[in-house]
Amino acid sequence: MSAFHTLLINPDEAVNPLTQSKSRQFLVTRNGEDALVHFLNHIFVEAANNTISDVHFRDNASHMTVRYRIAGRLRDMYYVARQTSHDIDNKVRARSKLDPTERIAPLDGKFWFDLGDRMLDVRVSIMPTRHGQTIVCRLLDQANAGRSIADVTMSDPVRACLMRALHQNEGMVLVTGPTGSGKTTTLYAALNYLNKPDIHIVTAEDPIEYDLPGASQVQAEGHLRSFARILRSFLRQDFEVGLVGEIRDGETAAVSVQAANTGHLILSTLHTNDGPSTLIRLADMGVERFGLGSALRAIVAQRLEERLCPHCAVQHELTPQEAQQLEKLDYPLEGPFWRRNNDGCAHCQPQTIQSEAEEFSSIGVKPGYRGPFGEKGRVPVVSIIENTKRLRRAIQYNQQDEIMPAILDQPQYRSLALTGLDLCVQKTLDFHRALRLSESET
Image (cartoon, rainbow, N blue to C red; front, side, top):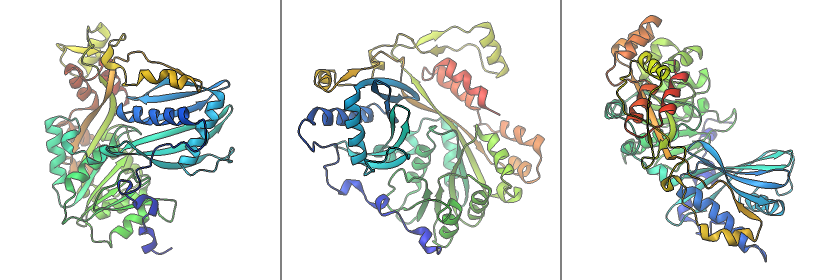
């Protein structure tokens, strides 16, 4: 396949759903489906309105469980009769254009769901299991695509450092963290800031998660359209800003560094625990140190944690062991520190339409967990490393003993744990969640 063919955009991804037909909810296609269709539409509207990231439909021996991933944790929201579970499976397959007869192989699909004022991009994964099917729907709310950097929670010094990196004409900005840590949201906020009429932005993604007006977005797929091959083709596309969905191997890393050192601003992600470990990962990939030291502008490390409910949070008294842990982190003991209220309050419950319970019961639907949570929504915990002259020299000359001192010397740098504790004092993050952040850091 030629280099040109690697730049062909998937026609399904190129279509703007906002310009298409508004009949983009589940529809009644035969008699007796009214309650079922109403229930399915209710699920996706309810999930979108409560910032649910994933909806799970899981077959059990006697029933189906509908689960929401709320701020990182799965909650049983509905229990569905076995017969209705088959109808749900068929409806989701039809909506996703998936084979209704395939019950052995895993299936992947997608569909758009109309929320009225915006569109919800739903990515569907169906896996055959012992008791039937497990359907997982990842929800990508297109409202998130328009977020600005100001919308991403981070301290002023961290934001200023990120902006300095984005103002460069060339270089590489990396965002690191585990799956579900909000990396894509941060990257698209950066792209929205950089997206100007006189700027050519190109992206290589797997999958393309949001539509970016004016950008050339390419779906990475297999060896013939790998991140590295697409990026090499991009180098002949006269672009200023490039997004590489993920640096997974040495080839992609090397081409990214090459692009960043030849007049392009490259944004990408890695799956590492924190900023310092990103440098170790890139070295393990075989990235040439002088090139990396020259290309790197900043490393953003982040997590996405449950936001503490400010209405019912409880002040936390430190135990002697916790005080000792804070002393090791060199964090002041004065606080005040806050923790979740296990009893929760009315503000922690997801918005739902309780009056519809009777109608849903006619198709064998029972409400699941409807108690309070003590937390509502999510908050990013963000740390940033700037590639200063001192750090650049340590990278280029492989001065391992100098790398951490060069990082700790930066005024804007605070580890994820310290940043989490700052959010705890601000009544935004549970104390125990903040403290656990230190366990995964280098």
